[in-house]
Image 1 (cartoon, rainbow, N blue to C red):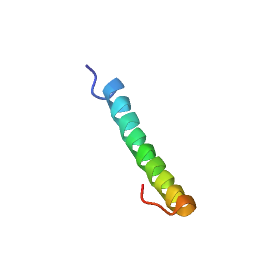
Image 2 (cartoon, rainbow, N blue to C red):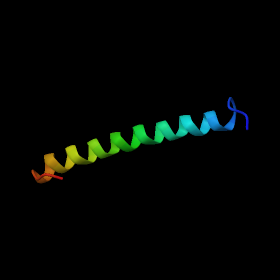
Image 3 (cartoon, helix red, strand yellow):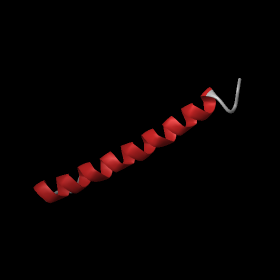
Length: 40
């Protein structure tokens, strides 16, 4: 196992995914509230 290689990249990709996922959820909830005026 090379800690500076593949594992590092995997960890970074995982963090990026969580970030984008949370951004998508916020965006979706905002649109839902804006257009349907309901809690999501």
